[in-house]
Image (tube, rainbow, N blue to C red):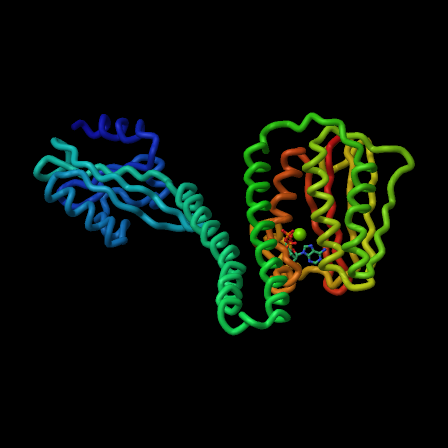
Length: 348
Ligand SMILES: Nc1ncnc2c1ncn2[C@@H]1O[C@H](COP(=O)(O)OP(=O)(O)OP(=O)(O)O)[C@@H](O)[C@H]1O
Ligand SMILES: [Mg+2]
């Protein structure tokens, strides 16, 4: 094939593509391939550029057997590890010697690989979270059948622990379903009329027993009038419940949780009219190390304390999706020893 024709042909392929002929040298590469593998690769022996054994093996076999091969090329683009699916096909009638070359096409499958990894991590996390209470339940069933069979005191105590563990599993499954629903609805704009002030008042009212348990004072600072927005009432309630409950649970005993509702005609965070809901506690705060990952599923800053308090670690993941659905923002500020402030900014 004419050299210009071959170069034009390679440039027309929308993926990084190169040709390796029977002399084992790279005889052609398009601009995408140069960006991926370096500008000076033409004319070089392919093994000095593509050093990974599985890639070398695929090219060698393809050149020898003249059969298609497929493999993976692993790399790093400076920001993250990358994975490319490499197809290696034999093209007859081109190249310097023995008239043929292997054509390599690189397809970036990094996102696909990451999605697969996320799915595997998620399944592993869910299984682990379900297994912990399940193991406890099985242990107590065995004890109730054996050693504690005739001991009514032990039986009552064990049954109440078992109830707690079963509740925990129930909560976990409920949260998982909720997360699933919120994620699948994320692109649907909510359409209800919700009064944020009334919603916060009623959330605080229902969390009063939790606050009493911690001897924590709940304070609402809100404008005199209601603050109506377009949103999803149930979901917003879920947001406020989790943030206020977290502030109580992870705040300090005999602490103080302040919920502040404010409105503005132009909030810089959403570049327009918005309402801000700030939930502030005076607890131990959160190490800055944890802040960026706090809204990941199952992520806990203090996993011992969270589990002890029955938390599933899904609350803030759900909050984040609901806030996204409302085209809002979630911000977390915290200083160790000084407490934390979670802010939700909702466009009006
Ligand atoms: N106000 C807070 N102060 C200190 N730590 C907090 C606060 N809010 C959240 N955290 C930390 O963030 C973690 C994640 O919170 P999230 O609400 O997602 O999960 P959870 O409360 O453990 O479980 P769930 O909300 O499902 O019951 C918590 O486990 C806790 O370690
Ligand atoms: Mg929570």
